[in-house]
Image (cartoon, one colour):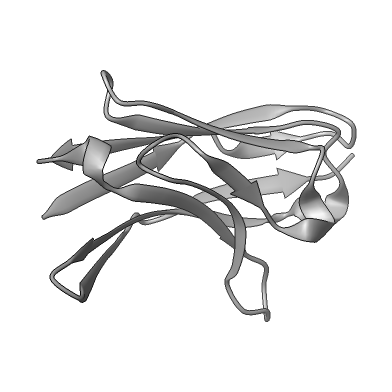
Amino acid sequence: QVQLVESGGGLVQPGGSLRLSCAASGSSFSSYAMGWYRQAPGKQRDLVAAITSGGSASYADSLKGRFTISRDNSRNTVYLQINSLEPEDTAVYYCNARRLIWAVTYDYWGQGTQVTVSS
């Protein structure tokens, strides 16, 4: 079992930056692939970035260049750095932990943190 708590969201002006954090409690954090998703009002939840247990990062094609995902296994935390924020980035950002054990996928979600980009 993994519990996830996101933080770092808020109101930011266009062009600004934010670093979101997701703190995990429970066992075996380093064994989980971690991801950041976002959901804008009236839209589906979409993948923003993911990082494997080994530290390999991947990004949604449309978001490459402004988003950076990283993890610190010693702190059981995954981060999402967002630069050059745009109003279209306004959404609730969710942290996800995923692990495959014996052909069973275990998925855990945080409660989300609101990011609002507005002048």
